[in-house]
Length: 488
Image 1 (cartoon, helix red, strand yellow):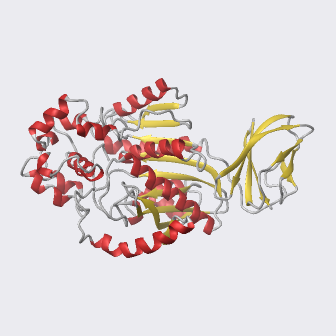
Image 2: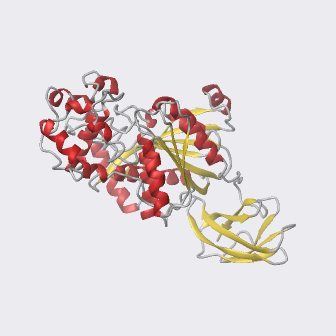
Image 3: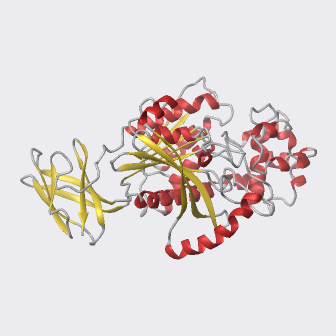
């Protein structure tokens, strides 16, 4: 996606076949989910690939096979009311403890053009899962099985839909005894870059007790929606994807009731009549661009365009500003990737974001180019591949499943199973302090601290009892050591 818009019906027709099909399911299941705090509602296996078949698809470094599942899960809509959403999970086939890696897709107009429908972007999930990540690919609200319009480039709902899918993914893995190692990587491209940044921000601001982001890689995203990317609204030159402008106009008209009363208040004829029927989830960008002028701002009512251009607090700019995702301080590493010749999502989004974060006090933020000559489409592969390589450099090594007295080559935990305390010992390692974290089987960190090795061993006190399978991560000068245990 470039910065603007893809699939958001201006009105949610009551005749929407998909919505009518799932509403009875929605209300009956959500009531039970609310009582049990369950997020995952259903899943279905879509396909299975061996490592060799993945390599035939182009995943040249695949080390394991994958299963692709479609899931439906409980979340909230833009007004905070219960709804459902769908997405895909690409599950590695093996016996390791795996990190979660969420991929946020780019702009989609068609309701069916999403990862849970095996769209082209599902290949990102294969690249991740084929090399040992549990890949989580949300469809977002209003796409796939989700009812209603898609709130395009709406930061909060992008984040809530993604976070709830991460919760559903943990439940999915727990039900299949798939262990997660506690790491969480976030990545997205175009609109997905915006969604990735919004999700990272919300996790650290509101859910740091539930998730810890290991690293995020937003790519070619419109982080400065109200500034850098809003240029397309007032520009008087051709733009390569004019459909973005009506997409965001219709999206924000839905998300912010009262932003305008009627389409004709902001869009000139004939577009006020021609465009709304094209944003009902069954058309692609080509159908919209076929009726759009090359200069998108031509469709705007003159008085609206003039006011937006001159008033920094114009009502539409205020709505855009509400969806900026660059002015905060990430704690986990952020590596934005862009291409200077991107004519869809201007690369200055990344520069503004990086400079603002650093000025705010961030210490681990980068903005790097994937190729100065690449436009938006050509930028995707090198940006995403480079980001995955960056993730791989931080990914914990495979920790085989199954409780053993000695899971790592040199480290031991005795007794194992443990209760509230245990002794960690090691051969051939210098005495001194080490930091440690304790994670549940679904990846959640439940304790952290330091130990001081003396004579090759140290005691650790664990909070609580009865947590079942866990794994202990020890941060040593040689890297992360993972020891599996059971807490009784």
